Structure formats: C-alpha cells, structure tokens
Length: 362
Image (cartoon, rainbow, N blue to C red; front, top):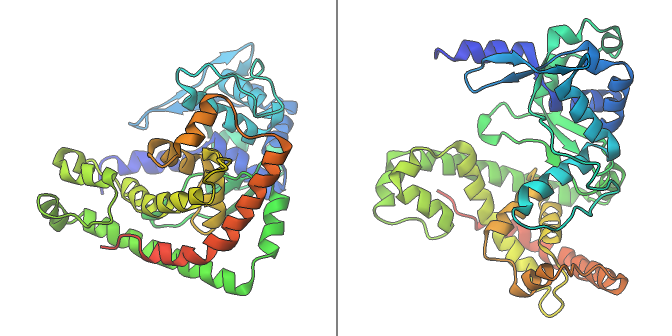
C-alpha cells in the first residue's frame, strides 16, 4: 500500500464533488439539475454549508464566504439555474474553445451578459450535509454518488448507471444532445437484433482496449517504437510511442483515447462523404451523429467534437462556411440536412460492426 493511498481513501469517504452531489439528487429524486439547485438555494443551502477545495496532495481548505453565504456554492448555483446545468456547460465549452474568436454566445435562451465563468471544481463534506433536516428527509446516501456514470440531457434530466470497477474504462459525465424523452423514444425503436449488435460491439471494444493497454505497457511496445509500428495506429499514438520521454507519461485514458479515435475519425470521414456538394454537416453535427451511431460507447459530443477539431478531417468547404458565420440554418437547408443525416443512418449503421472489427488490435 502506498503512502498516499490512505489520504485519498479518507478524502473519498468524507467528501463528495459538487457535480456528483447534484446529479445524484436529481437522479434519485427524478428532478432536473437546475431545479435541485433552486430547491437548495430556497432552503438557504449556501448559508448552511461550506464548500471545500482540494489540491493534488489531498490538502483540503474551506471555500470563501461572502455576506454569510458560501461564495462557490452561491455563484455556481446561480449560473446553473438560469437555463439548467446542461446549457451552462455548453456555455463553458464555448468559452473554453473560442480562443481569440470574438463571436458572441448565441446557442441558448440565456444572454451571454447573464452568464459568467465561475469556479465549479469544489467539494462538500458528507457529514455536514446530514446535519441539515431537509437533506436527511430525501434519504440519500452520498457516499454512493461517485459510483455512477451520469448522463445529463438537454432538458437537464439525469440518468445513471453503475460505474465500472475497472479503472481502464473510467468514463466521465456524458452530456447528451437530446432530451430524456427523445432518448427513451429512440430506445423503443431499437430491435432485439440491434441490442445484440450493440452488445457485441461493446465486448469487442472492451477486449481491444485491454489489448491496447497491455501492449502499450509492455517492453515489447518500446522496442517496436524503434522498429515497426502497427500500420493502423493514428499519427498521434505514433508520436507519443516513438518519443520515450512522452511514452513514460502515457496513461490508460490516453491509450483508450487513441483506440477510440481509430473508430471515431474513420466514421466521421465516412459521414462527410455523404455531404459532398451540399456542405451542410457542420463539425458539431457530425460529432452528434457519431455519438448517435455508436450508442454503446459512452462517447460525449464535446469529446468527439474536440477530436474532429484537432484532426484534418473537416472539409475545407465546411471550414469556409463557418469562417463566414454561415451555419446552414435556413429552413430548406435544415430540411435537406435531415434528409442527408437519415440517409447516413440507413447506409452507415450496417458498416459499424466492420469498422470496429478493423480497428487496430494488439
């Protein structure tokens, strides 16, 4: 047992992240995240409770208070109650990616002048939570909140499933681009045969991830870095494997990412072949379609969008349209885009299994 195992174990048993806290209440009480935050503010939660911040050494200190209320809680809850946490998360991603771009935020009901970036990476003390009567009444075990993978939908509703005990398959919160109602409706259309196909895909993915990690962690992989790399590995993994200094910093998550890119990026390339001449599928729309076509992979739209942004796959015609702030949002263009996307669903879905099976194996 390492010296830092105990501090980590003690911290995990005594504290819950603010996201897991909100998501777990929303999930167990079948409420939206925004409504949970509003209910907590109504009960003077920011005045009753302290937030805590932690560094990488597991040193914990109390958040600042202002006018008798915890500053972290008050500011963060105010942001996510304007139009829900999902909308605020989209705003945070927009601000993170905009760089020197001066384009204003336009994608939500809330004006950019209302939103602001606030600190949200803080924790709550579980013992302190149970001292509040209104928290005790909902009868929730917050020590279990971190044991789930959460899906937060466009409507701010939450679904959750138990987190894998294998750290290789660690997945963060999944931000969905549709509502919970739409998602359930889509699931009802899935046939038993499709469910079995998704299950097979998932098994193939997990087995290949295991093989990737075993290979990348082996002495054989370092030797091969100086000799011959598997042809199907993307340029990014070639770079990190051939640079031994970078290789020493390779994490299981990075290995998982490299494997997933070898499925996602070829699929995106295939999708854009259906859009030649029309140029209606913007990068984020392709990311959304990739996530839809790979429903069993627990991918996030913003995650796939980041991979596409970093790649050279986005057609020049699409890049040029976006540079002119032309996103194809007229009614005829939207209707034509939906026709193209449906054609892709019909044509590409049968090829997904082959794409997964041909991904690099070690």
